[in-house]
Length: 272
Image (cartoon, rainbow, N blue to C red; front, side, top):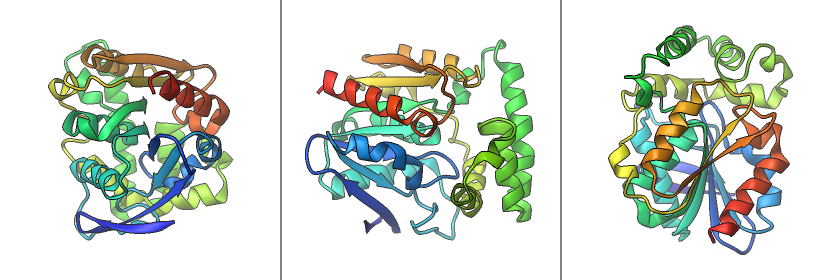
């Protein structure tokens, strides 16, 4: 484990494995590098696996100013360059998937390929009347979460986000005390994301220039809003494939760790 100063912020990271291509794992909202612990051991048998805490999360420094997705992309690029991992594979979950795809569009020379699970790039659906009711419902569920964070009720916000937005009713009670503590600690970072006008957007024209392989994944039990997002992304990316994890939802690397590690490793080997 180590710290690297990037873009004015101390970023915590751990590198696992001794050989093979580099694989960087990018966690989603509210979370930390610990979210990957069930797959790191298996993946590190074939790859050099880097996990890290995004700025403002857990062991990384939390700046006084609000964070942005642009800064997250710059941090990911900086880590890959500073640790001499380029060209690397990058796998991201949720908002981490959005960051990974944004890096693909901005700095393709740093990457061998991308594995992205359910990026919440809902702005891509803004002109689709069929998805409007779902987007409105998501917005209605997120608004009180943001209000609770702003009022200082981080525990209440975390519980509501897990049960009503991300994982489904009763999920908060099933989380370990350690996982709950991470969510509560990192609540302010979600307020930053919610206030970032770019959080749900991506430049499809930039993605059209990314010719490296991309695996877009979803869970069979995930909310239906992700399927049309992946379809639009797949149409834009020249070398994209879509995979669905049977029985899984928004965090397959946690709920179906073996399957996630196997699919990820197989895709990288196939396109090695």
